[in-house]
Image 1 (cartoon, rainbow, N blue to C red):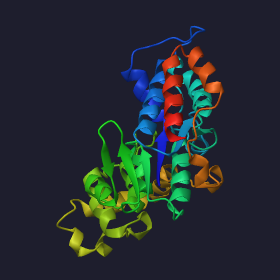
Image 2 (cartoon, helix red, strand yellow):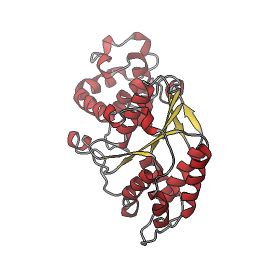
Image 3 (cartoon, rainbow, N blue to C red):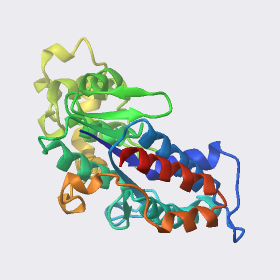
Image 4 (cartoon, helix red, strand yellow):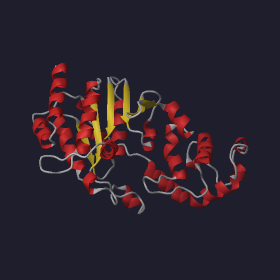
Length: 296
């Protein structure tokens, strides 16, 4: 079997900005919710059998306690943010497992489910459906991959290395050095993407990079400019780099997915018809019913 793990936060943002607005029966904006549900039905129609969706029920997480500058919900359009609980309820009614995250983030839920699914011998491949660079750290060979559903691009371990210059296990270290503006931490001064890639491709992790530039592998001297400066910055800001790596490292909580069988889609619940009526899109319910009947 294949397991599809969907970044519901990314999907909701994508449809909010890419689809026309629509109001529900009570006048609430639900266009993004309708877009996500329609997209998931396409996935199911194309053969997906085991599906889970993670959302950021609140944007803040435990990481905000670790670093004051970490991303918050400030600035998010209230019309978009109000659709998160609507989507979560609708997904449950559709019969899709959903993880509405509060203390952790949606990315952590996806990482957790990917780890559980990868340990199941019955799973042939795990597709993490998001282009988010943070999830690249979860990629394993060609068994756990990222899928960009917009472009149809599948990124395996070799693809991660081609894109970032490092293996998946080094992605948190790479983000610690270069920063992540989307998540609100700056990285280290003077460290660019190329230098971080070359150095981490050689050393793997922050703790393996010497503070003393004279101890750096001579093989790096022709590939990296300003080694004394980079080493000096890392030596002076190593504590910050280690904190940034903690922020970038996804938490794996296996209790979020006790068993892969829980992801199996067996059709919509009886409540889905009423949900679609509230969304003023009864066609979604008809599509879900047809899919369930075809699989029966």
